[in-house]
Image (cartoon, rainbow, N blue to C red; front, side, top):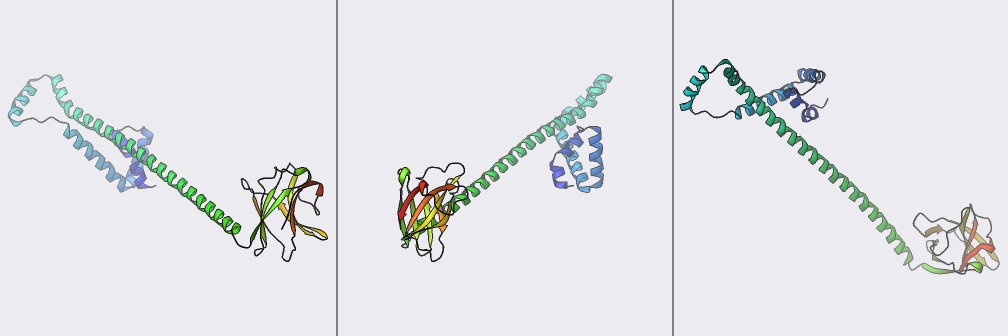
Length: 259
C-alpha cells in the first residue's frame, strides 16, 4: 500500500469524522494499527479538530465570569444540560468548518490535477506534431535536392493514343541511376489495374520493366532505382493488370517521353 496516496485520499479525515460505514471504519482501523505513519496522521487530524473547536468558543472577560457562573448555578437542570452542550456545539462547529475546508481543498486539488493532465497531454501532442513537421521538412528537402541536382534531367511524358489528356513528369538522375515519376496528372487506376513504368531502347524496340507505380497515400511521387548498365532512351507508362505484365500492353500506353 502506498502510504502517501492513502493519506492524500482523504479517507483518514472521514474516519476521524465518523463518516464511514462500519465495515470501512474497521478496515481503516486495521491499517492504522499496522502503520505508525497513519496513526500519526490520525492524531494530527484530531488535534486540528480540537484546535478548531476551541477557536469557535466565545471570549469571556474575567470581570463577567463570576456573574455568569452564579447565574449558571441558579439555572434549572435543563439549562445545565444546555450549558454542558456548549463545548459539544463548539466542537461540532469546528468539525463542520474543518470538513468544509477539507472539501474545498479536495476539489481545488482535483481541479489542479486535471489542469496538469491537460497541460501534459497538450505538450505531448505538440511534440508529436513537431516530429511530424520535422519529418516532412526532411522529406521535402530531400526531394528538392534531388530535383535541383545537376545530374537530374526533367523528362515530359506526353499522352498517347486515346489518352491525349494524360501526361506525367519524370526526373532522371543519371549519377544515382534513379528516376522519380510524378503521377498526379494520370487518372486513378481502375480496380484490378496498375500503372507500370517501362525503360525503352528504341532501335530495335526493347522494353524493360522498371516496376509498378504505386504512390503512397496523398503522395503522387514514386521513386524507382534503375538496373545497372541499363540503356534507357525513352520512358513509357502503361496500364496493366494487378501484378504487372512481362511486356507492355501498347493499346494501354498512356504516356511516352524521350530521355
